[in-house]
Image (cartoon, rainbow, N blue to C red; front, side, top):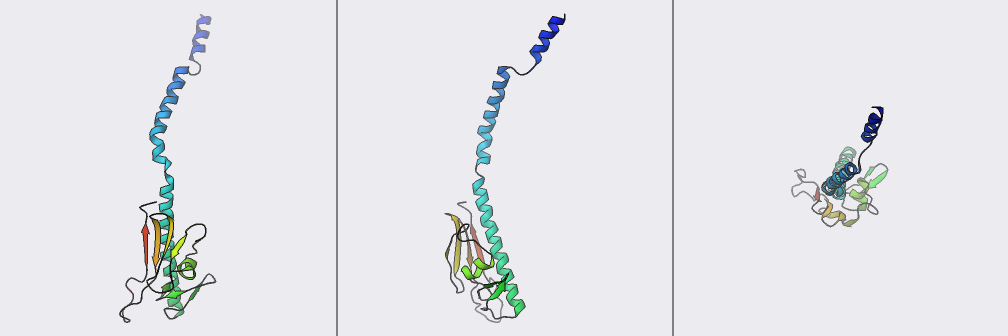
Length: 163
C-alpha cells in the first residue's frame, strides 16, 4: 500500500510537458493581441510633450504680461523673469528666442526645434517634434482700438495629428 502511495505522490508533483506547452501557447496568444495595444507609447508621449509645451507657453506669456503690468511699464518694454530679460510686444512676449523661448525656458537645440518667429506683433514661432506634431506661438497683435483691451492677445496652436 505504501508503494502505491509513493507512486501516486510522485505523479502529482510538478507539471507535465503538455501543461507547460499549453501555458506557453496561451501566453503567446495573449502577447500577440496585447502587444500592439501597448507597443506605441511614443505617439502618446509626443502628444503629451507638445501639449505640455503649449501649456508652458501660455503660462509664461501670462506671467510675463503680469510682470509688465505690475511694473507699470509700456507694452513694448522688456521685463525680467528669473534674471533673464524677456522682449515684449503689445504686452506679451515676442515670438523669438528672446521672447517666448526665454520666458518658457524652451530648449530649441535638443527638445523642440523652432522655425519662424520675429519681434513684431502677429509673428509666429513653431516648435516641431515631427511632421504634424507641432505647437505654435503667435505674438500679440496691436489692438485696433486703443481704448479697448486686447481680446486675443496672443495665441498658441497645437497640431497633434502626426504625433
